[in-house]
Length: 635
Ligand code: PRX
Image (cartoon, rainbow, N blue to C red; front, top):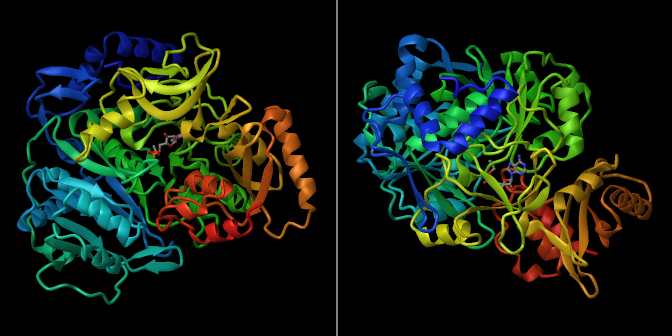
């Protein structure tokens, strides 16, 4: 029992040790006590990283929606499961109880069945952040269909590629979506994508913006009347522990996006366990993760993890800047949010705005604030700590990946003392190691190297859809018998981890290994700087030199830029050393970003290296227009 909810540091170390020494016993106890199963497992874990093959809770039978919905009905039927906060603050929020969630999910599950969807079929979900998105995900899980959620900001080409790769039979979408003051014609994007997707037999359309759209006879149907006519009862499909639950695409450094496959039981156990501990979730809390369900963060920590704990999880349709930059803080006050989980890019964007946007609202309900998606720079960490957490809420800097399914390295709030920019300690069951250039594990606490994990945790992705060889090649070939994360990390004397960034972002200058994150941290400390990204470019003497792309807080900055360049290099020299000084500094109107807010260094690298003819597809960027400007002003 005590394994499940960690309450102090001593207990963390005890639990962690047990999870390493007796991993099977550790996870078995958690699985046994906190979930409902239709049949028990024969074997807790069977694994071989050389194949690679990983099986957790072998031969167990279950349905994840019974764990996320049905079992809460008796005691929490009238509790809010999903709290929907619309894009427009004047539209009332919706409190969707566990009872209503059950009803809606079952209805949608029956509609899917009526359209020929069966266990194992792939269903593409291309929806904005509205309740139907959560219903659709859970309805698939109810009947054993494999959902493939595609973020509804992706272009028709990106959508088509993903539908084709996994041969989806159905698409669930909406007439359109709201995004701040704009609306987007989602159905038009789907229509365009489906011109090249023969596998899709039906399209279900939710009504959100009441726009006039084309419905193709025989293929497209409005969801609402179908759901109204459907039964609210639907027997859950009994799934094997290792049956795929979903596919989620993530971009690789090259080639096609990778359809990461997550399976049922291990994913459920791990996301539920980490949700409980990393957010110190208690009954009555109101939890808000601002990610989109189109990303892994939304899958694991808006839908499955919180619902498996019977929590109230906010589903937010809007953006942080609409109707003004106070929206996040207004929502926290309005719903008395207790745990708030967002991304460094959002924090940095909001930190640029007037502080009065934050100060206007009462944030005293907050107990834990979190960060995910990229290294959080020191300045943003302090801004978040000072202005949002008011120095009273621990910041959980959670490190993980689409491939890991759940958080792997993170503080446990009120348990693990935090240090800015450190993701701190591995969660129970996670065995990180740092590898040197020769593929050897670096022993001893103080170390810097490539981050690998040497033992499976329950929610590790099991394969890449349709391409197991690529899975093996990408994650299990660089270091024998280890999962390679693609990230670099530093471990301090106490064993705390600081993620230094993708190792493909490591730049070797005059033989020195430089991580981009610490240099960007230094730059960002300059009070004129809003955001920065550095990349390497070839240099005759040093091998590589550094090129900095820097956005200023005020685009109309009148200061002499040469002085500013000197000041920035001075800061870097002070914080890292002269070796990390930038050879070129280009001030830009913005940095190219993915839809999830990550800076696309790949594109900046091409510009810096003057390889602008081979930039690749930039259509899926959030702001493709800045690329042209940066190219034109290249130094
Ligand atoms: O480089 C790490 C960075 O994001 C990568 C994973 O991206 P994605 O699959 O899109 O998943 C993001 C949401 C889990 C990692 O390889 N990353 C994620 N969280 C952190 C981070 N880097 C530093 N600190 C973090 N907390």
